[in-house]
Length: 356
Image (cartoon, rainbow, N blue to C red; front, side):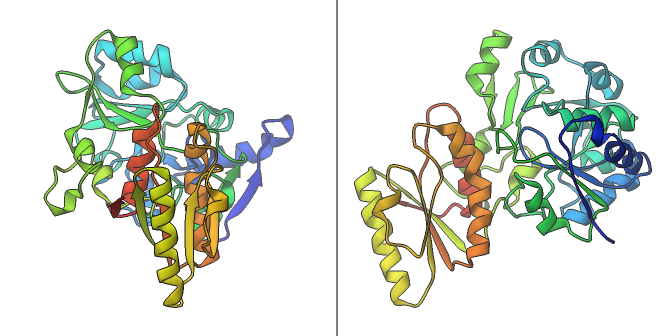
C-alpha cells in the first residue's frame, strides 16, 4: 500500500483532498489527521471491520478502547445509552477541546470500537481539519493516536509517516499540533466523575464547572510513584495499563534540586560514555548549557509548561533519530499540567526514577 501525504491548510484548494479523505472513511479505510492534541488514526467508529483495521495498523491490543470523535453534541446523544447531566456542562465548557468523556454506550457502537466494554469514550476535537473530516465523511470517527503502539505519540505528520508508511492510505498534514499531550479522560459512569487520564484540562477546572468533587483514578496516582506492574494499583482505563510513549533508548528520570540533578546526570553521562555509549539528555532552557552529553535537547523554559508538553513527544522521537543508547531526563512537576507531563514521562521511562 502506498501512503499519500497531503498538506492541508484549510483553504478552498484543500477541497479535493478532503473529499478523498472523507470517501476513504466512508468506505471503511484509515486516514490519519491532526487534532489539537496529537495526530489521530481515524476510521468509521460504527463499523467493526474499520475498527479492526486501526488495531492492526497500530499493533494495538484489542482490549484498549478507541476514542470516538464527533463534530456536534447531538452525535454524543446518538451513541450513548444515557447521558448524565454533567456531560452537557462539560461539553459547553470544554468542547471542542482536549476532553474525552466516558458514558454508557448504546447498541449502535460495536464492541470492536470500545475494546469489549459497555462504555464509549467520546470527544470533539478543536481542529478545523478534524472537524471537517468528521462532517464531510458523515461518520463518527474512532481515532487513537496515529503511531505504532508503544511509541511516542505523533505531533507532526512526518512522525505519522515514519510509523504508518505503507500501512494506511492517507495522512492529512495540518502542521505541528498545538497541545502535544492526549486529551484528559473523565469517566461519567461512576457515582462521582473520575479522571482516568490526566491532560490539559485539570481536576480544578472540572470542579469549577461542575460544582462538585471530581476524583482521580487511584491507579494514576499510584503510577506516579510506583510501577503498577510490580504490585502497584492498576489504572482503571485499559489504555493506561500499557507501556506508552517510549523511545528506543532506555530512559531514566532524575528528580531533586536542580544542582543535584545536573550533577547526577553529568555523572551518569560520563559513566556511560566511558563504556562507549552514546548518551542523550532532556534539559530545559535554563540548564541546557550545563550538560556534557552527546546529544542534549531543551524541552523549553521551565516556566512555560505548555511548551514542555508540546515538545515532549517530538524530543523523544528525535532521540530515536540520533540513535542514542541511553537518555537521562530532568523531572517536570509543573503546577498546572505537570501531572499529565510526568504521567507520560514515567510511562516512557518504564517508571525508572532516581531521586537525588
